Image (cartoon, rainbow, N blue to C red):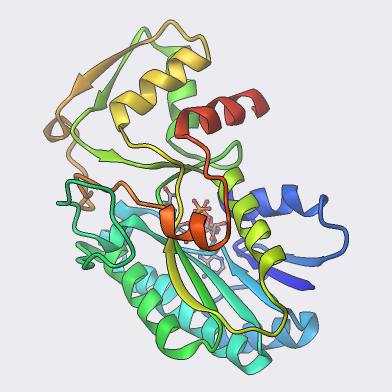
Length: 285
Ligand SMILES: NC(=O)c1ccc[n+]([C@@H]2O[C@H](COP(=O)([O-])OP(=O)(O)OC[C@H]3O[C@@H](n4cnc5c(N)ncnc54)[C@H](OP(=O)(O)O)[C@@H]3O)[C@@H](O)[C@H]2O)c1
């Protein structure tokens, strides 16, 4: 299978690159932002002609929630229009488009983990751009798998876990919000799950599904930070604070946990508990 990975310089794209060595029977084509801009129709068309992929894994996105408020046109160009460009091209080539989306498509006022059937309610530019990207894919790709994930982290790139590790080494204490709750999602697990899904996909069978996939379990950012310090054996104290102490430009959902049961059932996936995955990631750092 030829597999094209866009945004390969990011957290998730890097996890796919690391994982690809375990799949010598597939031919991977990795394109980072400099190598392929998903907004550029002509460039995408050329790369599709060159690689003739059976699968396009879209890991490219404008991911800064705060910058999206300052530069909305850029966020929409990448997360909405770029997704549509990939969908059109995947359709033309009969390729399956695996697109990663986000818990941000929900308004954040649920009390139990969000299911795929729950009503969406994106708030803010990033959230809207991701949601509209999903909608364009649902309306235009002939074969697609949209996977909404949770609080993504990895040994690659910049993320909450790595920031906590750095602060834990530099400071005696760190303040972390306790009133925002969600599902951590180790990008290494997500990449592995996608590969497991692809291995189970019947060749030539079209797919049109939107799923949730994060690690199992729910926690606050405070709980997440405490677990990082514990597992990394850092003496730094984590102090719980209200999110009003940390004003941010882009709106954040209060509750963003995801229910991953549907994808686990349909593809017979083992979804690890968030603390197990965090330990695994920290061991790999
Ligand atoms: N990070 C999270 O907490 C989180 C949570 C839920 C869902 N997600 C979703 O998960 C996916 C992967 O996220 P991630 O954390 O791996 O993101 P990331 O580390 O920010 O990687 C995204 C990559 O996309 C590249 N990119 C930006 N604009 C592009 C364009 N026009 N064409 C091609 N590449 C472009 C970026 O390059 P530059 O750095 O050069 O711009 C970056 O390398 C995204 O769809 C994201 O929305 C992320």
